[in-house]
Length: 189
Length: 420
Image (cartoon, rainbow over all chains, first blue to last red):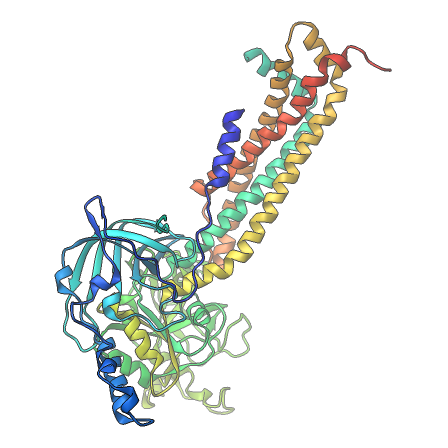
């Protein structure tokens, strides 16, 4: 009889509710650590070194400008263009990485997802403007991931590829062949 | 132990009338619980199956879910159309690989009519990136050619060469028939298990042609352009309901979505099918949870009935249990006897419930498929269903302990000293 009670207790605890995220939430960063040969990286590592879309704004001295100054408008336009044509960090090609992010489902099979986009903040593309091309990873998973509602926070282990095609529209980007996709659990401590 | 089982079985057979009712109530509750779970799963499957490999669904601005439901599942209605010039601009966009225009609105015997072009046969994917396949005949090429989905052809008994007329709007009434311009069935698609099966496919030019004398939104009295002269008119589509987009790179989907959202000529919207499905799941999950909760309660009621019947049986079996004790059965034997009985009843009920479920799904599946386009499978239990079943049996087993424990305490004391 005890076994049955234990079994039922196990079944009852099997579904632990995951944390709820709000739009724009990011996952807390954690110091780099190796997981079975996959190096943990942050989203900032995907930006090429020295690329700073905020540069046009930083060069401005807002206190010296008049209202509706054309230079301010121009700087904002430049920032938007830099953001749109975000370059990727080619040094990351072939890197075996582990990265945490939010899922944007592409292909469903019942409740399972095998192909999705990984983005750094929650609610991308639905509620808030999408991230630039160098902050989107197109993930193709070996094993399907069982999703609650398609907006899960996950860890992904895999080999990163940089896809470089030269069209005018942020066509270049990251693709990740994922060996493992697992539910995100907040780091302890 | 063997004797115990034999004893329990014989004792139960003695009370078969009441116990069989208990078994039936457990069976029904199990059928309900597993039926709800299966329906829930298979509805998801049906939706998820229907679209694959499409990066964006583009249409007039409105509710993303509504656009998705209408263009892909042919449910509900469109808020507005998009202009053909916008379709041409999207086609010319460098990031776009292919475009499938979709124009809906007419029907044939309640089946939706979809006007599209050859790109539909080339690029449309369903399930696990499967392409559409013609079971018979060919694609549409002349203006009044139609390609049928498998379900349409089978249900209405159409063969190649059949002449069919389409009706304006949806519904099965023959009020607004385009009777003067019949179509010829030139192809029948292989079964896909998606809304494609329930669709009549025609070319975009045909859609324009049958509406030539409908310029004012209704047939203009006295105006009739004969079939053979329709090509004297401009048959390029003026507008479509929506388009399915395939991109060269899936990662560019957000950039493209923004491009469509900021489209200058008219308010448009681009939806990621995967995201729209996720929204649909969220919407459905409320109802699903409620249904599951209700069926779980029904199972609880069934099991409570089991406990009540076995408990009530205790008093009428006082003698039986006392005799067992007096010939040497220990209290734990009595406990085991009653728990075994409860467990056996639960198991029989569950088994019967499974048989009933299979029978029901087998019986109802064709009707659900032709009527609602839902594909419910009979047979194999899914992992979730097995988990639910394990729950029912586990709880049934626990519940059977109750009368067992009561008999354990009372069997000797009460049984041998009957108060008459």
